[in-house]
Image (cartoon, rainbow, N blue to C red; front, side, top):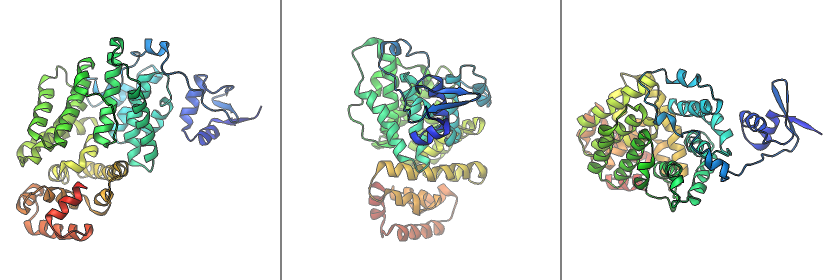
Length: 394
């Protein structure tokens, strides 16, 4: 029998070496043999997918709780060290990949998540697919983002909402689907409303579900309602869940900046920054950069230049991927052709902010704002505020 190395198998199957090693260890690569510390795989072997809907899988569905970093009330900045000391390999990997994602170490996220995309454990599969989808936005791997989204959507298609024994599992699947649908604007059909399933979620995830409801209210311009939802989640939390609070603070900041209440917006973005800086988790800012409308520039560009530049470097890649997935005409140009400051001014000006208000928000002169607007017009080939608004909304 002819054998190949794990690296050769990984290249043939277009996956990571870690994925091949894990599958071999689980006995899912028929005939695989361990030689020393390496695995030798029979040439031409493919993954032996297990039935993810088996009765056995339903019985073990709660062996792992997805999205642990939304549910662990970390109070210090040593979360990464805590996770690395988890004994169970799978639980350690699933915690690590999520921590790496929020820290912006996306290659590590992808490497750790990939072996679990075919896992027989539905909770492993769904939670890893969600983070795998977002992590791949920052690279030239949009097809992998769509692939991961399809994994989640396939589970939505199979939901049994009439089985009370599956209520918690269904809630977790719906959560992942709503995250992908809301933030990536992927047009999933038949996704149940998350509000009807919040009661089946653990406390931390309830906060994130409220954030998603607030985000949806923001998208339709109901800023006051969005603030109310996010603030209620903040006030009602029994424990301190840093990431959940960070998302809710960011949502409040975005709503207040759209209501032209800069002082309130600045207060909330500062609260979010305290969490991000303490734990080293900046990806929530990256995810929302295009709608933060100058809050990062005003508050942190000078005082935390290194962290700000790190966020911007990831945001450029993230937004390029987002626009590709969203697949709307001309959307990508805003991200690719405008500098971060130009992009911010374009967003504010298109939303009827006056030059004086923008200048105050960004701590620059009105003349500088006017100069920026002319540059934006030239780059985007528009000649009026209305044309700019139409362009941004396309």
